[in-house]
Length: 118
Length: 115
Image (cartoon, rainbow over all chains, first blue to last red; front, top):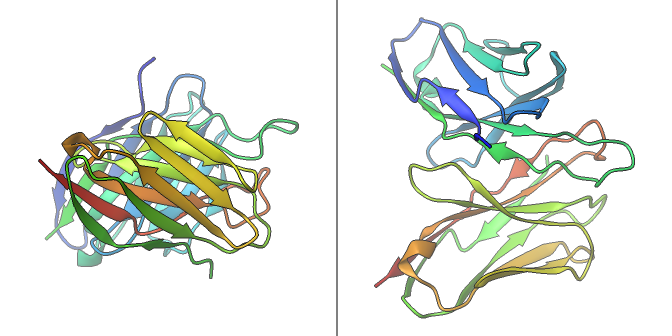
């Protein structure tokens, strides 16, 4: 079974530009979560999408947005890039919690997109 | 604000040494604790999901224990090998589980095993 894939793997942008990152989940997984990792910080939760709807959101400004398509693929967009947005962006897919199922979602991560903002 | 603390921040051991590190989390409203292993230039890999107080899980030379009453989990590596070098992350869902499930990660313990 193919794992989570993310494209592109590396990206260089300049301040003020916008960027779109893509994530393809494991086949059959309907939940996609996005995380940001910056130097010295742990993985910070951005948002989660399930069935094309944003279900959870972290504490990030409105410049960070996302969407999910009917095939569960997800995109993340950052507008008006700032230097501080330079980070590794990871997405993770999961089967998602089902009533009566286990009380946790095991998340499977992609390799990440390394974004550098100059 | 939910705090998930990991210690130590980094660790250097010699090949063959056994080692352990800690993840501390809020003990109230516990649902699950996740351990991940993250090697450089690779994806984080799920090691364990622990849900019950007193749980002990094992995968090869790696094992983990859970104490939900006092809010900590230990990860043990027996006979460390250079290929165990990685960052070990723990993660905790701050919400009530169910449909509102998201993970808060600790900053990780960076393990380096010297040959």
